[in-house]
Length: 129
Image 1 (cartoon, rainbow, N blue to C red):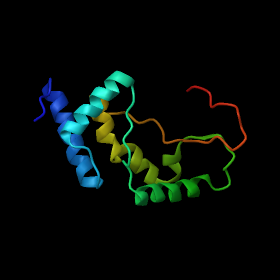
Image 2 (spheres, rainbow, N blue to C red):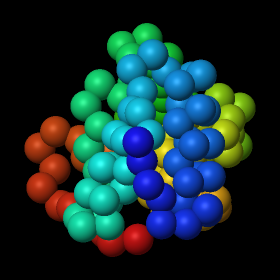
Image 3 (cartoon, one colour):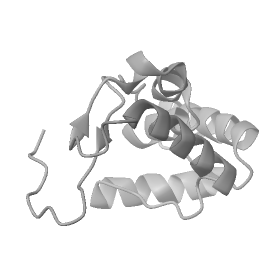
């Protein structure tokens, strides 16, 4: 049994759990989401091993290869959602969106889907943004 400190937190956790369970095979339970939220509040990030299936990673990789074709050495490419509707869907309503909402206790406002690349042998870091 999970006790939430507010109706907003309970609602966001429940919606995130329901959405995630419907989209991904290995999903966190409400108690897992509560633990993730506590870790996020403490550390500012969470790590969810095996969050994406190998098929989901392959799907993303194929879409990334398409939009980055000929641009492999470009360190940053923003606006991927303008090149491929798959990225637009992921940006606006991918399975991670309700999880993010549960972590920040608000609906996320996406700006852009982007690719950050650090080619082999390049020691310069990507500038803060």
